[in-house]
Image 1: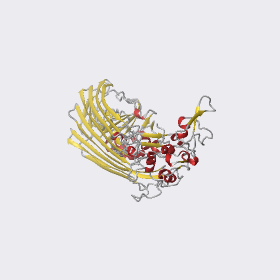
Image 2: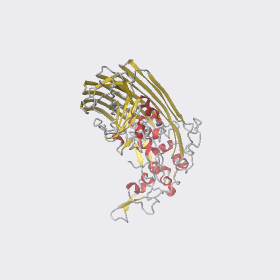
Image 3: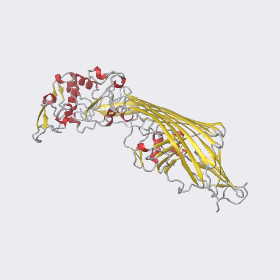
Image 4: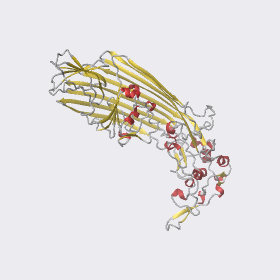
Length: 631
């Protein structure tokens, strides 16, 4: 049939009672923009035709919704209610996106009720195999690749304002599910207004109040009642708790409430969410064996005969020509008979460090490997809230404002914090974290939209976000290195206080051994604090502030909508990390040889007859001799 021009279109919000009007053009098209997400009733009237009505038409942010109908000849007072499904083929937008409705956000099974997990429900997404330390990302932002692009290339928008930390590339306010009215994950062909994104764009909208008072309350709890016991790390009951398993508990509770302040005019909505979590952890570590403790650490000759690799005396090193490589030299040294080091050659500082480590308490694998079972609990608390108000000032102008706040506190001890000593080591917190983390995130969004004419509209938004992180190790203010006579580490400031990091052998992330045959090398688990020991980038101070001003204009010309505008941002970002622990790190990433300052520590071949691995000396040996290789 022919197009019907000058038809009156009335769009009414079912929740808030507000109305917007438009008139169809010569081709029968009409456009109503800047609507708050939610269900709307659409009424179309034209002289000489029956009135068309569409009930509960869903409107989403950054999505074009169509309500097309065919008039029937008749009096205007007659009404035809139209029921039609959404078209199967999207022809008005080129983006590729997945939309999650309020019902889906509320009812989908999402682990730990983490909003960013919704990204994994989009085709072409994959979670990274690693993640930022929980001390810097307590909001739990998943690091997810979109179409193979780096995770930091994904943009996050909350109520039309920026919600991504520019340094770590993660979400700042991870909204409680109770506060989200919808979410859209766009993986391809997103609009030009979404700058700073190369992978995908996650846009989310918070709920607003309505003419009826509505609210919710929720509570979730998960405990260790059905968790299995690790036969290696949980062989005995904890002497303090009387339990095999460390206490593990996850609880989340909160609620929301919204309603009118002035009916059909001014609305308010707020929500609160609290999380209380105790993360139990059990694992094995490697500490000095009983033989080492009864000899090396007891003032006697140090008996390292349990390690099959020959130990050489670094004090006897001499440089000789290499018979196999003319013009090059090798280092030769005299071995310690029976791998026994005289007591007079031992370093009192090194002995003090190793002596502070707890004695072995299991013997499942061998007396010198994974001989200490550690068990403990990390504590995590989170409180967050949102408050939003919407004001329908006139038929031409609408205003909104929102404030979001989230506070996270996390603390966990280390595997070797025993007997009152703060020795650190792999932690009992998330991902092996040990230390204390305090994070406060904030976000403000405010804006208005104004209709200048039936074909010209504008909207303005102001956004502000703050991301503040403070991470410190245990034992701030103490000077354990200076106390045992090691100079140059604890320098008298809080930044350089506490236990330094000692890597006694070669270690992977979070202090887990990765040394090959440790029965030869004598590697021990890491002591102290540091990223490579217990994922403690500490002390760490990070403060990010970003101000955003956005102004968009929409011009409707015939059947086309032309949108243009600007996005101005001002950022004040400060990050003072400790990728290397400020109290110092003493490393040995070679086996025992490097610590004895042997040929292998310089990348040279040991003299014949060489030890089985082609190296000589020992990690623990060099430390005991007081001759570590600096990194």
